Length: 397
Image (cartoon, rainbow, N blue to C red; front, side, top):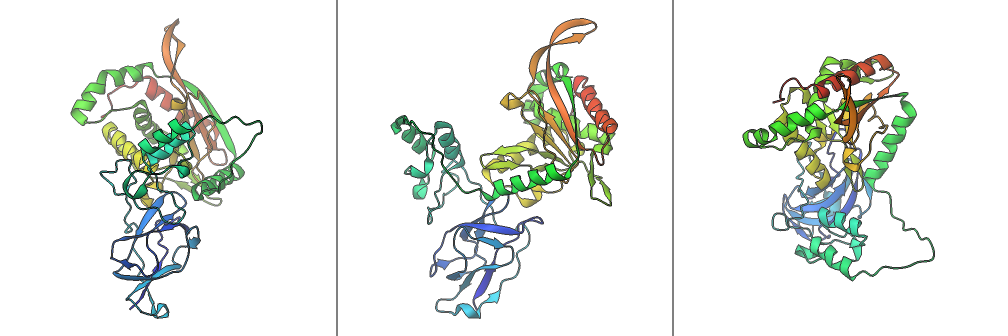
């Protein structure tokens, strides 16, 4: 009997999905578990499997269609079977759709063939194309099934001659689903939150000394390379423990005081911004924080994050130090009530014991929702974090 296939719901916040491309055409045979189509949620791309063996009798929606979760998108059945006889498919459990990581290593992951107007390129190739100013959609791919890989972009860049134009021209492109969500949430935060901003210069000299002295032992004994950002996340979680007033949500008539400390880590992507969540960060050792943060960031950049990794955040940290930014005011990840901003660590003159000496400092800032977090508790959190970072009393492990 023919079976209807609905648009999957891949998380509590997902309301609709965009069909990027069909891997099969009507009349093609499909096997249960075989990739049938690619969809885009408001955050990441997913490969959706066929729920049954049979023939793809009908594609109800074409590529680029935006379809509400639960609405039927295809019918699968036996050859010659009538589409009208299809019965609804059982709803898939959250997270059951298989997600495959897009990888630039073509020996590990078999790339999908181009379908329709969709151009398949590895994430690394896309990033290099952006850096070199190459339009990757015009490049002939040499990877499996025509996938565009790094060497294709490198070859195209050598053949591209500079073009001199007397007029200013602008290219246009559709707004991606991710960018639409980012725009919506930033506008919502800006409109709804009464912001207060506090900043403090933090001397990181001692913290860097601890890291430099312990880095070899951490790598040998724990198998991880600990970054300054890992240490910042470690101590931020413990500062929240001491100052829980910043770990709250304002819901109009009620106040939620989170019992867990779940820190969102902002990750910049080519198409926008995503915030995977480090759950129960205050209970994790430094090596666990380092390993988990690296896994989350890598999955975010590859578009393979599980929906659960994007939910449950209570406080967010955003670090632009790698971009050379000294200090900035971050937008609160609404409905959270606070976000910590971290600037670049630079060599500056500091005063110790009444003497001006060289040191390494960075500017830390906290933006809070002033409707629920007053200046004093926000300042107390920043002071506590500053004290922890400037005087790390024990090696975090």
